[in-house]
Length: 199
Image (cartoon, rainbow, N blue to C red; front, side, top):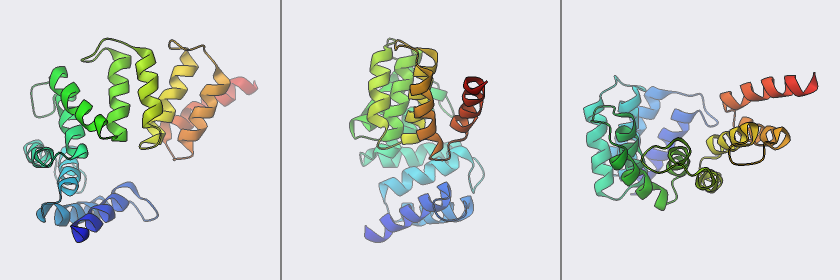
């Protein structure tokens, strides 16, 4: 699977604009090449392209089929996206129970986006009882795999004092870490907070 794995990585480079210009059409083509060879992560990433309409017309049934193929091979990215579809109700009947089931499976494999989303679910009473301390733990655990989202969420928790002592200095520190990954919402928060703390 070396070739299909490399094609999947090239797809991610173009999808995310990592050291190349962001190009959804090229990303789609690389993910498709990877998926056709049966590479589960490539199938999951191709499904995400169909889900979001990136480089191809949005097609939720196609996305769902690709996520199912990836899930059958116990692929964390597929599990995460399948859970996300159930969480949002895109193309399926929304189900917090199904969402938590699949997102937990992906989180158990260390998928950063899944850990972050699971933290969000604990923070917002979606499929699990609100537990801000557990949300905080999951955001911190997700730092290594999906840092910008986790850093941003930790910044929000400190900015608003969500079961943590409110501390703008620590919040700004987390927002700066997220902004280092060029995460737009964190940059906006920094503009607001640094503007208000310097005045």
